[in-house]
Image (cartoon, rainbow, N blue to C red; front, side):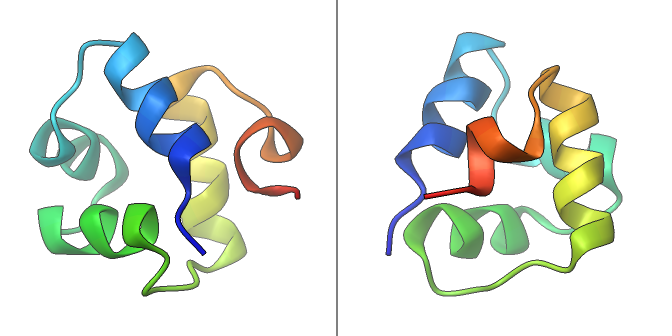
Length: 63
């Protein structure tokens, strides 16, 4: 399932996938795969993404 909330939060911070990936220590392809719903990130990566985007786990990853 696509993660449109992650994509919207990233766009709201005016970050590219590459910029967010750099902040989180992963590849751009990883961020792309998470947004497309092709990859289930670890809890540590979820937390890193949330910190980078100033969001909670619930706001980005809870259905």
